[in-house]
Image 1 (cartoon, rainbow, N blue to C red):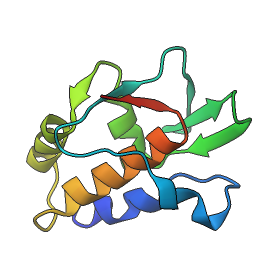
Image 2: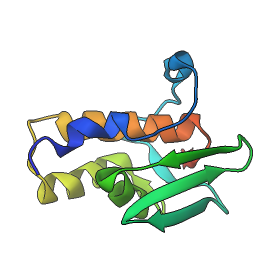
Image 3: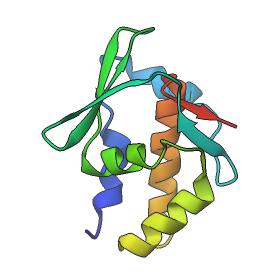
Length: 116
């Protein structure tokens, strides 16, 4: 799956203005992340679709985004999540961490995950 993580930052599909990501929530390797309570999510054709009732938006996660989403059912430290994914997938050094942090930042900005 070489290069699969390069696509993560493109996997959230919304009707947001292009500048929505300029104020991303602060997520780093020491952050602990998890689903927001009562988050609406469904599996559609093997991929996760999220619904933000507060924002009236749907978000489609690709294969890798869906896998990451499934690992957020319980609180997890970002560095631990990245370590697990590094063992499972091949990518250039730093690519998985960069893309995971970016995806989690986007999810946090949209109010779909908790960050502590």
